[in-house]
Length: 78
Image (cartoon, rainbow, N blue to C red; front, side, top):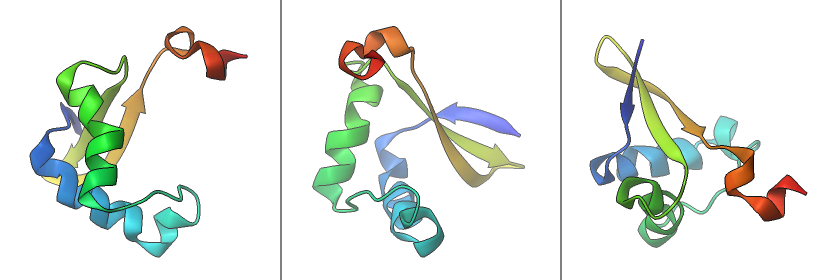
């Protein structure tokens, strides 16, 4: 397994994953291009303190993870 930083080229893949029924029932997320850009673009641009990664197995995308520190989101820390 390898982890690589998410790029905008991954946005259609994220939208497809987020729209699949087995993901949507746990992570109810909008899948429009605007919503994907809004919620994942900041990690790519460095305007959000999170790090998003595509998980690959032998070069095949198999998952997505986000990493962030709780103290970077004071409202959610409470």
